[in-house]
Amino acid sequence: NAPAAGDAATAATEPEGEENPILALGAAGLNFLGGLFLPETAHAAGLAGGTVENDDGTTWHWSLEDNGTLTIGGTIDRYNVGFNSSPWYENRSSITQVIFEPGSSVRENSLTNLFYGCTNLRGVTFNDLDTSSVTSMSGMFEGCRSLESLDLSGLDTSGVTDMSSMFDGCSSLASLGLSGLDTSSVTDMGSMFGYCSSLASLDLSGLDTSSVTSMYHMFYGCSSLASLGLS
Image 1 (cartoon, one colour):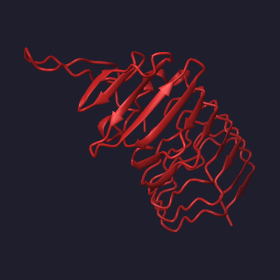
Image 2 (cartoon, one colour):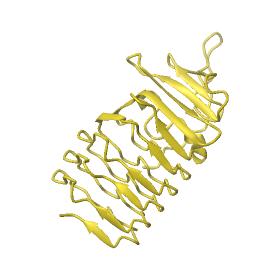
Image 3 (cartoon, helix red, strand yellow):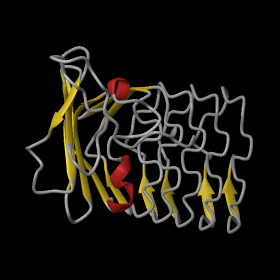
Image 4 (cartoon, rainbow, N blue to C red):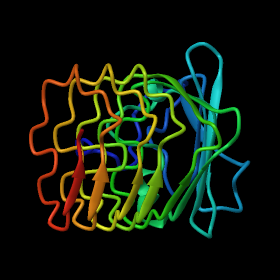
């Protein structure tokens, strides 16, 4: 689930008189509108930020402040920015907290690898995030090695089919709230908890695994896991 190479900013050479689209979002803080990335001004005080216009005219935005807080809001659809990495990927090591603005929603595959490699992330506030349209959470928190606790019990996961590597490499994760999650559509839980070496106990008794076809390496590297509820 590692992001594809080539996240660094590049510039396309265009014929004279045509626009030259900038194809990156990063420390420079760029804004995607009308098919082009334009300089972002709304978040000039922070480390980075941007606004993305979706194909249907809806938008979503993000801003990363100097204190490490990443705020995300709107109708989150990563179709126009790619699913292999997030627009804040260049600044991932600076992120310590994530806050979703109230009223925000996420579409289809847009949680895939969303916080991949955010090695200093310590907390996420979902604020009733609407995830009813989400189909994949694969790699969502992969490599978040500073994350110690997380509560996903309020998320709507009824449409999710892929949870592979969701917490893979979260080596500090000691508390994980999964109660109430609807996993009836999930088919892939491979490496879901891989290398969660601080997890001493985990209660999965409320999860519906009737559709799961892969649990390959689901608990691989969970060296501290002493109690596992499956009934």
